[in-house]
Structures are given as C-alpha cells and as structure tokens.
Length: 134
Image 1: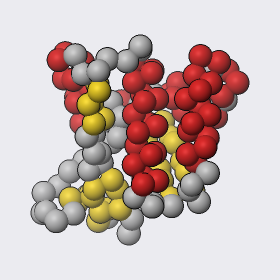
Image 2: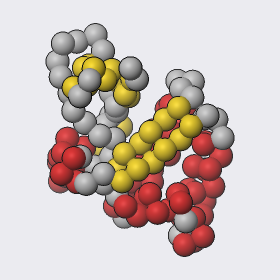
Image 3: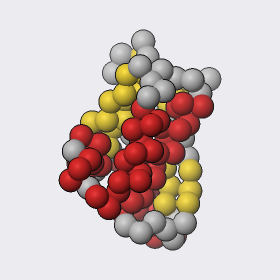
C-alpha cells in the first residue's frame, strides 16, 4: 500500500500555461525531496511536460528549469512522470480553471493512502480523488 501526497500552492501568473505546469512540477518535486520521500510518481494531463523531461534538447526555452528538475531527481531512487487524460484529472483541472479566472495559478497537493481503488485521506474517512496538475 502506497501513500499519495496532494497539496496546494498559489502563485502569480506564469509566462504561459506550460511554464505554470513546470513550476508546479518543480515545487512538488522539491516538496517530496524535503519530506525525504524516495520514490515519486507524478501524473499530469500536460503531454508537453512529460515530453520536456524525456526529450530535454527539444525544449531550449526551458533549459534552466529542466536542469533543476534533473538535479532534483538525483535525490530519489525512483521518479516517474506520466501522462493521463484530462478526463482522469478532474479535480486538478477544475482548480486550475478557477485559479486562472482569479489571476492565480494553483497546484493542489494533499496526502492520501491508497486503499484498493479508492484513495483515503489520511486522518479522515473522506474519500478524495485528485491528481497533481491542472
């Protein structure tokens, strides 16, 4: 049984939606490092973000951010970033849309423990279902 961590962070507008996705990945990776978690898996509906980490030479505009991600990944035994359909990323997508309408970028992180197919919030009986990025 693994644990899932979800959280919340707000920042001012980014240069683009892709920059906001990268900022969220950098922040979340830093949080996991600070929590001394050794194996991480991120899911995003942003296929460009996944491509950026697998084909960094194709993204010269993001060279600095990609270098930071690569350095952060050295702290982990296992790091995975995978693409999921937007239809499976509902909560994060809704948060992102609401945040954009208010002029902020939000990233949502919380901690849950997977119990079969239903993630359970730690310390609560409430069920949550969320992904990291909107």
